[in-house]
Length: 94
Figure 1: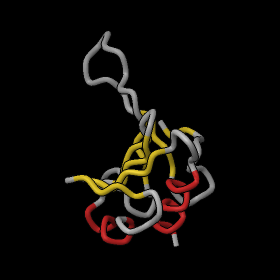
Figure 2 (figure 1 turned 180 degrees about the vertical axis):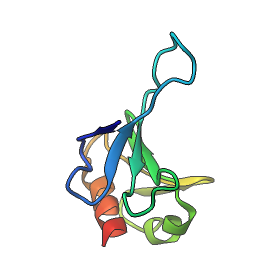
Figure 3 (figure 1 turned 180 degrees about the horizontal axis):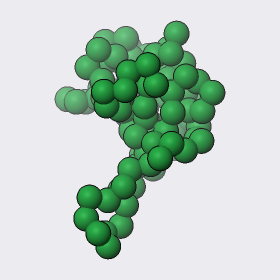
Figure 4 (figure 1 turned 90 degrees about the horizontal axis):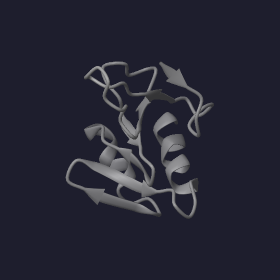
């Protein structure tokens, strides 16, 4: 199910994740989907970060202001401001 979220209108969409097990609480993140790249998500929106995990995007994002590269993604905190993560989403849609 696609949801309108902070990435709406930026060429990417947020997708709520479901639980794989009946009666279990849903996961605490939204998947970030690029409609042009539907094989799988390009990242996650968690309670504290935008996390972009698509391998082909990491080099483009790792030197942006606010970026924190980890082993499997580039993270942007949105605790103080969502702008760095939204700027990263805009770059990926360019």
